[in-house]
Image 1: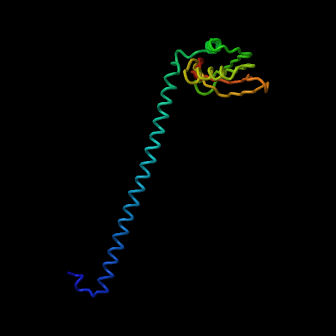
Image 2 (image 1 turned 180 degrees about the horizontal axis):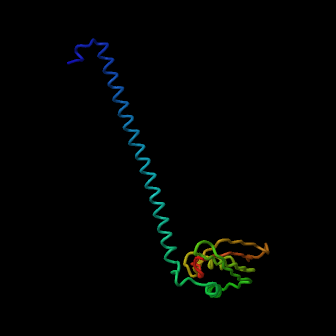
Length: 171
């Protein structure tokens, strides 16, 4: 063999060099495997997040009315009034206005004010709107104020919105 032709010092040098090269190759291979494993772990986490978002959006889409049956301003106000009556909330103000939001979309904004209501009733109302989808609207702003520090009642102002196809269409 070739190693037998080398003297002992050269043989040791070749063996140590080969061992160092082998360790370097194994180290690079191990680092590559760990790097790919880390990337895969990140991709799996992103895929799980995306799946959760897709499921959430699917639920939102299923709760949305179809384009032909999009509720109008009066229908939404009536639905809100009925829901408030069912819960036992008395509103002091319920205003709605509609404006064109983008190409072919209209945004109905509903401003509701409650005076001296229990927080439990407000959360029941929010639960029915946001989670159960009793009204096809989303809460955009919620402000709670406690007018009397010795009473457990609140003044509440909330803004809801509904996006729907513009009845006038694209112009």
